[in-house]
Length: 277
Ligand SMILES: [Zn+2]
Image (cartoon, rainbow, N blue to C red; front, side, top):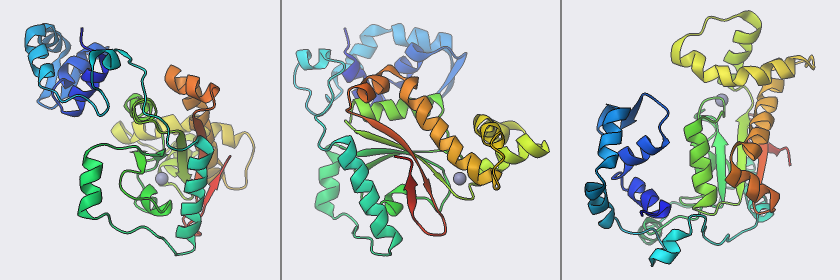
């Protein structure tokens, strides 16, 4: 019986990706490191347990995993170094420094890089927009190893994004998730145009804005003076609310007070982040 933690270790090494992709799979095909394969092919490969066990036997266990008993505890997470409120305070303090032009971070030296190669314990997950003006590490005055970042234009969360968040919370011990929007977000602007002007967006661009449309309609109901700005703030609030119930691990930790999920908006003009909590 292969433990979930060992499988995650194998996934990190890129070795067991096909097996995991099949195990998750309700899709007809899955894009793997070796290209697109059919579900049946992945199933066949995953069922070759002897070969898989041989590969897994060579996988280095995750940090802190010393025996089979430890590996059997699938829900074991590293101890939290900071509380959710402490993590939130660090982000607020970092943004205050950044917005005042007094950022304190320095590029990490070789020793710190080597230390980080041994493991990571980010104190917050940032779900942000891809916009080049909103780099989380910069606007929160953080360094390598401190933030686990998931970024898609419009600050939305796909199933893969949700998995990334759960991984950071459950296996890396992150006590805080911030869904971060920003003023003048072009992706939300495009969603507003689709909802109000029937703008013609197709293909992957339409897929990008569709998850934002409900927030646009919700904001529209309140007749705001600036619909785009209202939709930006509604979008991150809605996304944060959905994250609290989207996965059992997140919901449980929120209920226990060991995780906070909050929304926030970064102002491109002032460089200040306004938190909704
Ligand atoms: Zn944006």
